[in-house]
Amino acid sequence: NIIKNANKLVENTIAEIKEKQADKEVTKQLRQNLHQELVKNTVPKEKPKPVQVIVGGEIVVGDWVKFTDSETTGQVLEINRNELVLAIGDLRSNVKKNRVQKISNKEAKKVIQSSAGSFAGRMNDAVSGFRAELDLRGKRTEDALFEVEKYLDKAIMLGFPSIKLIHGKGDGILRKMIREYLRKYSQVNRMEDEHADRGGDGITYVYLN
Image 1: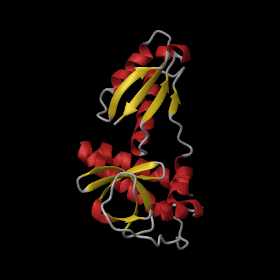
Image 2: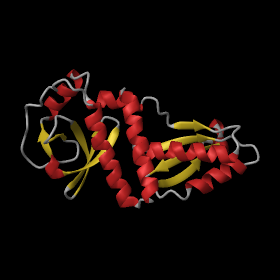
Image 3: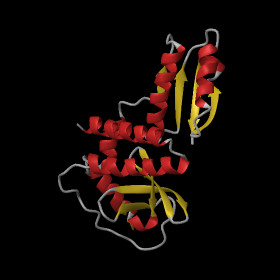
Image 4: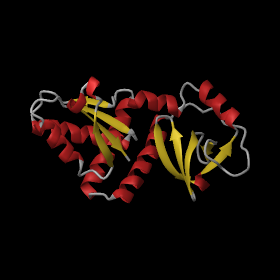
């Protein structure tokens, strides 16, 4: 079961980060390892359709590339010296330039469109059960924080840019405790209330690094 395997990999990686009390760099490496494992575990066993057109020239943002040791393809989002940030399906992955080859954009799109078992398609299935919002209304503070911890860890590992926490207004204690708890995460960039017409301070948007 692809979804079960992907979720298990995410949970194991989260556990390893917590056990090692990993800093930002170690966490980044573990996320990269997770993405590589997800590639191996979600690509179907039938022989993939090879990308035939490998092109030369400098890799720039927007180019399509393939891994040298597999047929997995991704699009370049960022370039940081010898490291690329790739979009592979719904995931972002940091890889070294020497691990990929530039391919024809036209050919890459053909392969992605024609391959029902592509990595992008498989990962869409794997993360389809994860919603970018969590309803905590009516929960005790202790239970709510436990849910937030599990949910946030998974959102970070899956590379979601933001999440929405619905805690309600009430006396404001749950909102306050959740925000205090979130401040301990270095991956949390900022928090803000929903627009007043759509729930105001009863909802917190959390933006992740």
